[in-house]
Image 1 (cartoon, rainbow, N blue to C red):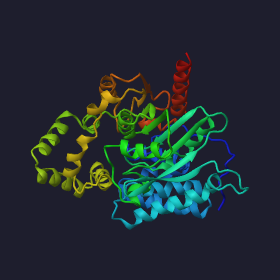
Image 2: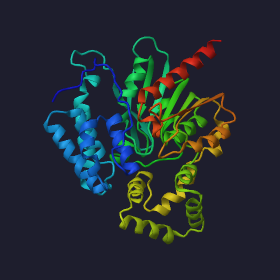
Image 3: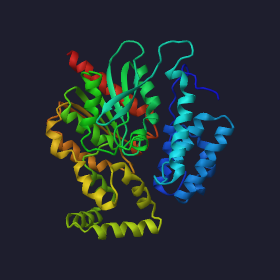
Image 4: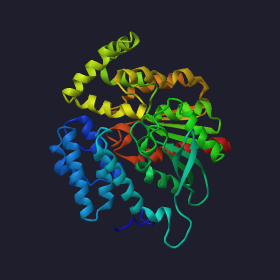
Length: 400
């Protein structure tokens, strides 16, 4: 197997492409290309053949096998990783694909972790004790003079290998970076069976106390737009907060994308404890192979929920409002004008509730910039550069 050269320049792919008529499938295909290492031309040739999640699995596993046979490891990592994305947890191929992707990733990028010349590694793999398990952490020391510290994590369906190159880019910009997976994410849910917690300060404080971090900036991506500010509300070691998408609450996000009437009906059924009504409707949607229902079913185990009713009961805890007055750090919120999953309209509520933030900056990205989609997948470098410019501006302010 060829290995990736650690000295190669970091280049982020740009562009958000119309690859499939189903918006959610289309987004994940773009994510696979821009964040995970898929090949645009190769994916475009087969993307229109994907009509449901069975097609998704079959085609991406075939792409993974072909890329591996042709020694295109970076592409194979992306295809096996994303083949697992829409598989149910009881599908034996899900864990096989996930483990295959991880195996290939750490073999292909081995020289970052264990340089052949015996030099200090660019990236350390560490573990932080958390409750009855440990959380995986990648640590990258800055190149050149240290400007600050970043704690970075993803959101609802992330795995931290996906943010490997953003971590390296921030390292090149002079930052020490701690990239980690928390409960409900990546290996922590798949291999250590630890589901999400709305009290995200617990895993974050496990990390900040373990490494004795001070004046750290935290970046949370997607659902991380709730998780990171939530952690900052309780952890005074954090001085700056980046919500790489606004996420005031699960209900705000659900209501903005599904409509007020549908949201109100679901909340009425949940409040009335009409478990059968909620779960029977969901079961019918699954039987009809509704893609949104199937994607939601994939999420449930990662939250420790056996049914949609159980999930509905727990998501009210994912709400910034009760703790927003405790957030007194500098805050940056990034949103996309055409975000499919988290409409930019929800940002107004989050901005209104952050009354005690030391400073509050909001940046809305547009389609013309190429970053109007969810989490600016179409231009990762623009997102990172925006964060770094914000950090520089705060440093200048603090110097007077």
